Length: 247
Image (cartoon, rainbow, N blue to C red; front, side, top):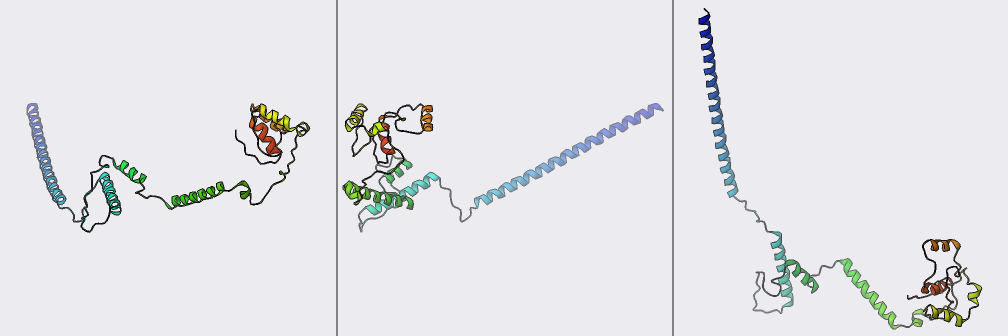
């Protein structure tokens, strides 16, 4: 009884394994069929795409590189300038082909444009630039007129007889200093002056009667003694006089 039962179990297992192999083979065949069908569809779509690509639209415009477009614009500008400068002949035929010969044949596009700008052949000035040029021309004209006029003519009859009134005053020793002593001090410090009633030079900031906070601040900055132009220029300015100083 046990022997028959064992044989039946083995035969059942063998049938199950055989059935399973058949199912797996059927699934493989079905997958292969699907893949083949998909491959045919892709090929068909590819053929249709190629046919659509072959049919170009009527309004298709080919792409032109930027360098070529710039060169064409430059050639158009050059032809126009050449046409404006050249004499008019009735029997001359205009050529539409760009000219690549001549002195600018070996120059790059940037060099050719800069050369045209230098020769004022390309006018790219804005309204603001033109207005500035007009203003500069007017200023130059006014400056030329002033150079031709004398100081008395430029003053238009106005004469200043007194300096501006200020609260500053010189020390007594400077007020009583003679012109010879003032000239000796200027000569010592290589100071040359030209004018009327010029104040004497002062050798220290303290002698110029600056306030104490200013003197302390100058000392903190390491400024202990005025320069020769300051020795003469500061007293002139403090006394309310006009001055042109050249160091």
